[in-house]
Image (cartoon, rainbow, N blue to C red; front, side):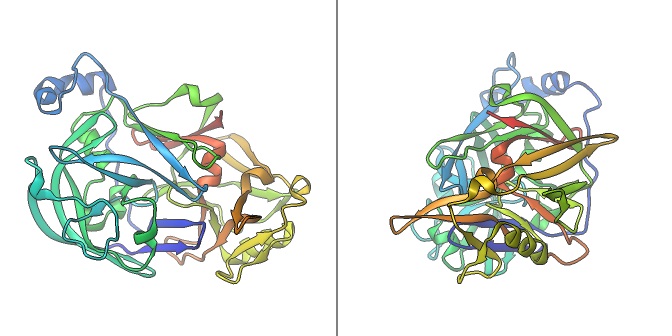
Amino acid sequence: MFSLIKAISLFTLFVTAISSNTIQIKKFDISPEEHFTLSCKSIGSLTKMDCGVMPQSSISIQNYMNAQFYGNIHIGTPEQSFTVIFDTGSSNLWVPSSTCSSCGSHAKYDHSQSNTYVSNGTDFEIRYGSGSVKGFISKDTVTLGNIPVPNAIFAEVTNEPGMVFKKGKFDGILGLAWKSISVDGINPIFNQMIDAKLIAEPVFSFYLTSESGKDGELTIGGINKDKFTGELFYVPLSSESYWEINMDGFTMNGQQVISTKTAIVDTGTSLFAGPKEDVKKIAKMVGAYSTFINPNEFMMSCNNLDSLPVIKINLCNGNQCKDFELTADDYVLKVTMFGHSVCILGFTGIDIPPPRGPLFILGDPFIRKYYTVFDVGQERIGFATAV
C-alpha cells in the first residue's frame, strides 16, 4: 500500500503518490506502426477500431479558475460519463460507486447497468492526509477520447472523506504515473493501452490553458504540433515512479532559490510546490505574505506584478541545457473574491521526507506555459512554449 500526500486550499489541489520503488519500462523493439498492426486485427472488432488508421485521440481539458483541470472519460456499455483529473502524480483510476453514500452529487458508476462489467471485488484504499478513499476493484471498458480499453482495471470508491472530493468539479482521478507507485500494483490505464496495443505511440501530451473557462487538451498516443511553437526540448527521467527529472537550476535575480535538484512534473498539482523554507524565501523576494488559511500559501498585492523577477528553470539533456522562463503573469494567480481582485503566489510549501524527498513539484503553472509531452517509450519529458 503506497501512501499519498495531499495539500488543499481554496485554490489548489495536489494529489500525488509516494514510493521508493522503480520499475523497468518496456520499450518497443519494433516500430510503433508494426506494434499496432500486429494486434489490431485480433482486437479491432472488440474495440471498433479501424485497422487502417493509427489511433490517436484528444480529450478536452476544462479549466476551473486555474485550480482544477479535468476532462471526460466513459466507463461501461452503454457508456457512463465521468469527469476526472488526469494526474501524472499518481497511478490509479477511481470513480465514485453507485453504492457510495458520501460522494455528494458526483456521477456514480453503476456496474449493474453495464454488460461489459467484470467483477473483481478486491479491497482498494488510498490514504490521504485528510483521510482515505476506500472502495473495491472492478473491470470494465474504459473509453478515453475515442479509444476504448476493454477489461480496464480501476476502483469503485464507496467512501470519500471530507469536502475535497465532495465539492470538487471532478468525479474521480485518472493516474498517469508509473506502476511502481500504483496502489495494489494495478497497471495504470495508459500502460494497459500500451499493452493492448491500442495507441500509435507510447506518448501522451498536455496543453493547459491559462484562462478559466477556456478548454485545453490531452492528446493520447501522440503530440499536437499546433499547440506549441519551436522545437520540443526533451529531458530524461531520473526515476520511473513519478515523472521525475533533474532540475539543474531554479533562479530569481540570478540567485538559486530551491535547495533540491529533484523535480517532478505533475498535472495534478495546481501550484508549484517545494520545501517550506525555499517557498518562504521566494515569498519574501516578491513581497508575499502567508494566508490565515494555510501558512504555507501566500497572497500579495496585484499592483506591482510588472516589477517582479523572472524565474529561470534550468533543465538539461546530457550537455545540452535550456532555461525555461516564467514571469509574474505565469507564477501569480489572479482571482476574484467577493467582487475584489486578489493575487496569490503560485507556490505552496511542502516538505516531503526521504527517501522520496526532498523534491520540487513543477505543477500546472509550468505546464500552462510549456506544452508537455510525457514519453513512456523513451522515458523522457518534452517541453516547448505553448501557443
